[in-house]
Length: 109
Image (cartoon, rainbow, N blue to C red):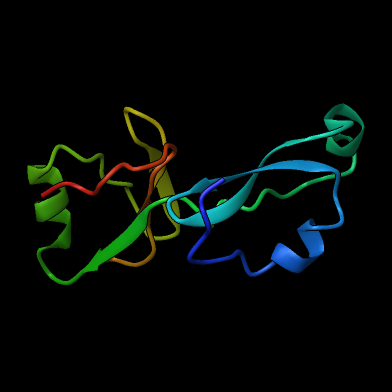
């Protein structure tokens, strides 16, 4: 494993799990957990802070996203899936947030 540059906000709590770690996007990340089927019965959240994310806002944010062929959520506080995984969320009338589903994926140019 490469030496991670950053850690999750809940890294200390996750260290107690019998898990396999991997560095993803320069961050120590759990990729498997022993007894994951049993844990999944009780676990209701996953730490995705290692994934690439960014936001855009402003009067032309929706038009810019459309020009990048990014789906536009219809109203504030809604989201749309991205074609290759991940989501784009509409936080307000002119504010959007993108989160990828895979590693080493960049936002559109």
